[in-house]
Each structure stands twice: as C-alpha cells, then as structure tokens.
Amino acid sequence: MIFDTGLKLNELKENSFEKITVEREEILIGKRNNRIYAFNNRCPHKGASLSKGSFLGDKVVCYMHGYEYNIFTGKLENMKSWKKDETWIEQNEQWRHSDDLKIYKIHLNDEKILVEI
Ligand code: FES
Image 1 (cartoon, rainbow, N blue to C red):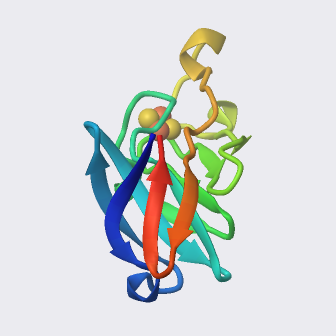
Image 2: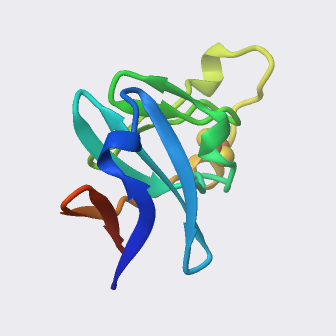
C-alpha cells in the first residue's frame, strides 16, 4: 500500500532525514546526493534504533554494534570485526547474523513524498 508521508520534497535537506511512523513501522526518510531513501528504523541485527546511528557515505552505521547497511539497497555491507576489538569477545555466527535492512519504495506526487509498504 502507498501512504502519504506528510513530507514534501523541498522539506528534505541533503544529508538529513525525517522519522515518520506508518502502520506502526518507524521509517527514516532522507536525501543523499539528491536521491531519496527510506528504510526501517529498526536495525535488522538486534533491533537498535538506526536513527541514533551515523552515516558513512551511502551507509548507515548502527550505533549498537557498528553494522553498516546501504541506505539505497538495504544490503548489509560491513560487519564489525569482533576479533579485532578487545572489548568484545568473539560472538557466535548465529548471534552475528543479520538480515538486510528493510527499505521502502518512494513515490512522488508533485511535491508530496509517498512511501510504499
Ligand atoms: S543492533 Fe544494530 S548492529 Fe547490532
């Protein structure tokens, strides 16, 4: 289904995002290099809020364990190396596993930003 985000294209600033809730899903919508992205705020690793993370190029970096997801494709592109970090013991493969980030298709209706979920 397609929902009106209540956001307008000219309201989105480059390299920033807005958090909205649609159908009980928290979605981050933002703009980078003039491209609009929309992804679920919940980190697919252990559920941390990605709005508290940081951005690194086209990736969002989760503040909790440092996993990096592409904000346009949703792909998990980098995982923290647990072996190199002395503050963490090596975690088992099941614990380290993460799905890709859930992303959403954006539609534009004039200046209105719509999201498909
Ligand atoms: S909860 Fe996001 S990387 Fe672990």
